[in-house]
Length: 88
Image (cartoon, rainbow, N blue to C red; front, side, top):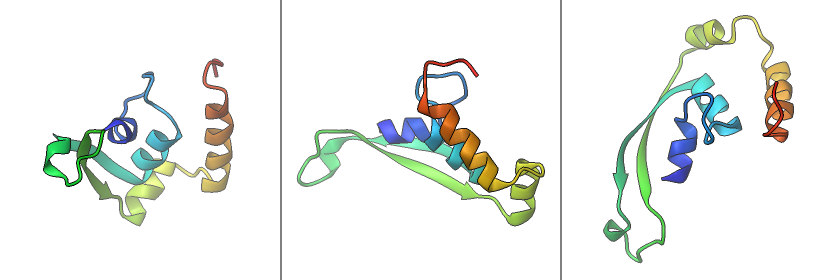
C-alpha cells in the first residue's frame, strides 16, 4: 500500500520521490483499490494495493520528455531527491 501511494503521489507531497517521477513519466498510474492482508495466506503484516499502469507509446513518451535526454533527466532527478529537505 505504501509503495502504491508513492508511485501515484502528486507533486509537493511527502510521498513524492524518484519512484513517483519515473513511474509517472513512463506510464499513467492509479490505485484501483486497497487489498487487506486477510486475503493472503499467510497473512502479511502490511496492506497491499492493486495498481494500474498504462505505459505510454513512443510518441507520447517523446512528448512528455519534450526533447530532454533521459540520461540527463535521470542525473537531475537522482541528485534532486538525494537531499529531500533542500529547496530546488
